[in-house]
Amino acid sequence: MLFSISWRNIWRNKVRSSVIIFSIAVGIFAGVFSSAFFKGMADQRIHKVINTELSYIQVHKAGFRQTSDFNNYIPDAVALVDKIAKVPHVTGVSRRMIIQSMIASAETATGVMIEGIDTGREMKVTTIHDKMVEGKYFEGISRNPIVIGKKLAEKLNVKVKSKVVITLQDMDNNITSGAFRVVGIYSTDNNIFDESHVFVRFSDLQKLSDFPPKAAHEIAINLDDNKNLPVVLKQVKKLAKGYEVLDWKELSPEMNYLTEAMDMYMYIFIIIILLALLFGIINTMLMVVMERTKEIGMLMAIGMNKFRVFSMIVLESIMLSLTGGIVGVIIGGLASKLGETHPVNLSMWAQGYQQLGYDAFVYTSVDPGMLINVTLLVILTGIIAALYPAYKALKNDPADALRIE
Amino acid sequence: MNVIEIKNLVKIYNSGEVKVKAVNGITTHFEQGEFTAVVGPSGSGKTTFLNMIGGLDRPTEGEVIIDGSNIWNLTSRQIIDFRMNNIGFVFQAYNLIPVLTAGENVEFIMHLQGKPKKEREQRTKELLEAVGIGDRIKSRPGKLSGGQQQRVAVARALASKPKFILADEPTANLDSVATTGLLELMAEMNKKYNTTFIFATHDQRVMDKARRIITIEDGKILNDEKFDR
Image 1 (cartoon, each protein chain N blue to C red):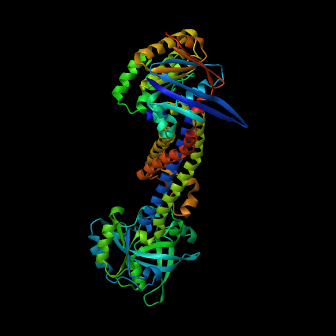
Image 2 (image 1 turned 180 degrees about the horizontal axis):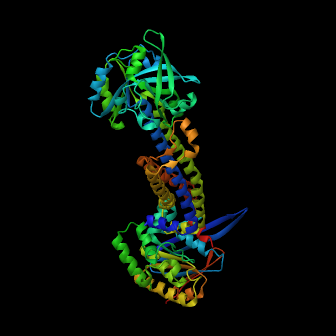
Image 3 (image 1 turned 90 degrees about the vertical axis):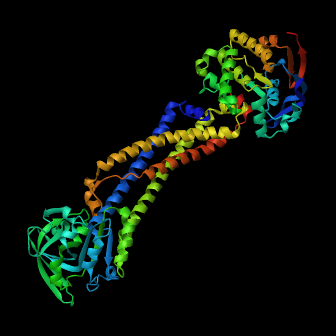
């Protein structure tokens, strides 16, 4: 019966209750949607980093990542690649040569990271081949083809079929150069990556630098799903004993922090929204209690104890908050669900976002746990908002309250 | 048999620097089944007197002994339970819960008492029929006339099966037809359930129905008369 009284009491002043419910709904909608938006943005960023740069797991010789020392390679890379490829959930394995070098066009030169890749295997690990904006991924030019990023192409002022010269140090620390022809230009939405990474065939780079043919600096591994990462990591570590085996979280800890930080920011954001709403609810509940002083006095007179009066006010506040909260969560959840298939278009500001490695089209990502937590936070807000008004109600003296005309 | 014994009841209000003696040493008793009117001019102390008997206003001095013990020795929590189980209140302004229907208003106190649903519903129906508005069980107070609302209030007061009912100016807001109807109803309930009724009033029609009239002036009993009606 207390539930029924509390619920009906909310609707005694329809306009006032609707206004506060509406404001709660709008606040929660904003919180839920923006959290899904930023989570989607972070997920996309991580996904992209894994697909274009990192892959899920990488194997190196210890120390290579720190020094990029050309001579610090995995000698038995080909055999290891074959073994890793047989591990369940592994969808692609690729070995890479990675050398810091200079790239020069007719106009200018710049430093880049040149990656010698096994093109067929690499396509199963990264998605650069899907990001071609001009030319084709190692198709059409048979001698020394090179794939470069759009940003770098602009910087060097080169096009498809233009010639570039790569200069690097070989195994004997001699400076050596090779002419390559641009076969394709890619764009990953991450300008920094695009400007600093070029891809050539493993065999071409190996010949140029006199690198052992069966070796590699890096083995990159792709998986069917991130959830299988721990299992595969364990097996790869067993196969690649003596080498450094790292997953994407270790390779790029900032990506892992990005998710955690994004979650934390979202909770802070929602708590700030709820804090603002809290004062609105307190105000409404105070009005409710003051308007009903006589009625509350009467209820206490006929035998409603303080606990029940307190519960009635708290319930009213929770129901008021929860009604708005649920409306907000539902609308926010639905809008976010829609955003999973219909991305938010940020192309107007794409330049700035792409500099940071984010997509211009953001697909939202709804976390059901987040929706539950937001609902619980709304209930908590309702309870906190009711405390002072309920305390005021309990201070009522029934005899005094009943004297009110 | 005495239901209530009152010994030297005093209530002093502090109104700024001035101390006002609203009730000034009343000693009396009420018996089971009485139908008593406490009368007197405005400010004579009738309501304060009733509030002290009803456990709403703590006396400055004196005792209200019900069932052999002074109710003002109870803790505030016990006194609320005491009111719920022993006293029925009828107020001048009806004071029904506006969001509940007539039936739910009557049922509410039994809900507080923890009575089972079936018993609550049965007694609600019986009481509303007894007060003559069985057909309005699903109406909210706003849809009822003043007389009908006061009948619901009487049914509510009787719902907890109290030892006595305290009615503070119950007819003050009613027209003469509703007043007559209500008084007859309360007299009937008084006889039917043998419930003690104590009114604070200055309505002559209530006095005409009362079998005992206590006249209070300046917080003291001026006259205490019994009538055979």
